[in-house]
Length: 125
Image (cartoon, rainbow, N blue to C red):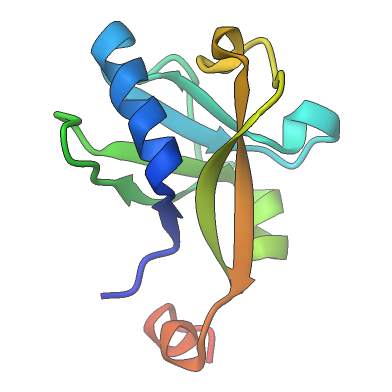
């Protein structure tokens, strides 16, 4: 089954720790500059989504009780709709509003173009 979003093993480890400490979380990817273009991790429901956002999918991570929803601003999605996104984590300080900021790491997006099979699955080919 094709998905639009996935998570690396390192990011999954951090998400297990964050959900163990804070409870259910969510991601939102906006189209802003600087840290605004990084995936932001919030407590579930802390960031209010609307018709201006697209639900990319949910991350199912072993050891995390609830799937983690991943959202993107609709305007940003128009640029990225032909890509598969993988949430990763690297050392360095990210945005102050994202839950991982105090950990000395930041989430980031790695992307690749969707395959022809994936493009057909999502109705883009």
